[in-house]
Length: 275
Ligand SMILES: Cc1cc2nc3c(=O)[nH]c(=O)nc-3n(C[C@H](O)[C@H](O)[C@H](O)COP(=O)(O)OP(=O)(O)OC[C@H]3O[C@@H](n4cnc5c(N)ncnc54)[C@H](O)[C@@H]3O)c2cc1C
Ligand code: FES
Image (cartoon, rainbow, N blue to C red; front, side):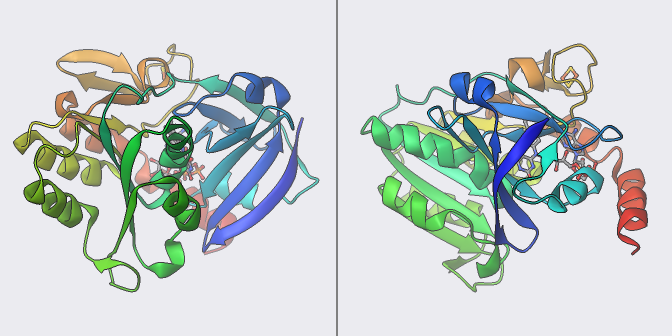
């Protein structure tokens, strides 16, 4: 059992949980994730380690309620237990060898770039951030990231915060203004967004790393569920990723596989919430 130490609603359907898990906290690093099971009937679901505190023995996750497991988790409160929390899984990110980085997050992808922003800031690395959200209500961790980064740009679909438009509009503008400014773009968000980012950065020949949120089951490289094709080679997101060279990703496959269970998931979710 793992106890929820704190719970905070950050945006509609977006909740931050601080969970007591000293063994995971002791070796966690940015880019890695945990696999969580809410109760004995639950599936194992992956969440990025958004923050950790080795002294307090805690890990923080930022979760968007989208289906059965995340809904069941949303009903838990501080002081409640969750059944399993395993990790850390995946390869840690190492961005410190680049001279100027552009971190780009769409929606809940901010959970991936927040710990990276903390590390980059602690190492005095130069980096800018673009956060893309649907509307102002969905903006999470922007104050923290503003303090850590050199420049923070915000885009929103409806123009209610920052610039009206998509993250790709801002990337195009920044790269057109100064092509050699960035030697790395790191992008995380919905697969179509990451693909669009890669299409732009390829034109400017800027190395681009993406964090793939493939569907996962065991998280250990054994079930094959999170299979992706990178530069023509089969890789497993859970052990070889979740970060890959975005210019080598087979995006058609990623997008096709991410939608495989949509109808079933929607049916179960609606049943559970009585919708
Ligand atoms: C490495 C990694 C890190 C992630 N980090 C975060 C995070 O920090 N915060 C966050 O809110 N979400 C994160 N996700 C996505 C999160 O795992 C899914 O939203 C969650 O599994 C949904 O479970 P559900 O039962 O509530 O929804 P479901 O009804 O099962 O599915 C809803 C949506 O989630 C996707 N999904 C379902 N099961 C999985 C699974 N096992 N693995 C990946 N996607 C799945 C489905 O394709 C669907 O689009 C991450 C995914 C991966 C692979
Ligand atoms: S989740 Fe099973 S191989 Fe990656």
